[in-house]
Image 1 (tube, rainbow, N blue to C red):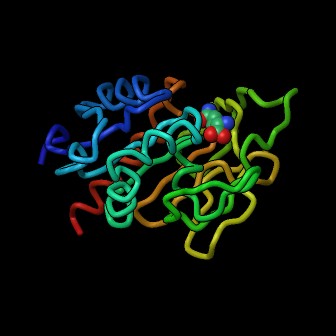
Image 2 (image 1 turned 30 degrees about the vertical axis):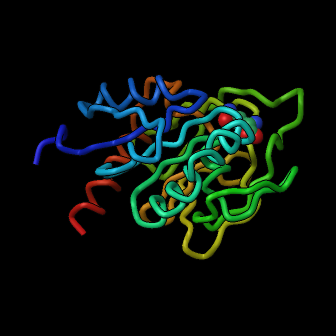
Length: 196
Ligand code: GLN
């Protein structure tokens, strides 16, 4: 099986989808931009990018998109970054809002306050290859993780990169760094799921 036979979608309603598409292309995977529920069909995995989760929800509440996405992420690999992580979360605070509710974490939106709401850090992670650059932009904070959730990286003691089976979420923006380790991890997870 070649890399190109994996079909990965990037939700392209709003936000930082182009950079994700480029990260995938740099790994030899063609990204399919997803703008309608029908475009979810046939995908092996989906990236839900950063942006503004409330704006995402406005778009998703049309045409039954939210419901279609809900059933998609139940079983198909999904990777949410920042606003995407908020959409995947079971519990959303500050303020509470609708979500897909599949990833067993609680998130607090815009949790880092005005002064430090955006930052570039280099932190150790569980991924091989040394410290990872992490770009945080008005990031949420993961305040609880369920027993099925593995924390792969943290900032100030709070998880910033987590995995639960076929789901991956980052509160930072790996698509804005050159390092492709997090995208590669997602592709590994997609392949793992395809193998069954
Ligand atoms: N602050 C945004 C939200 O609450 C997330 C920011 C981002 O995705 N960079 O939805």
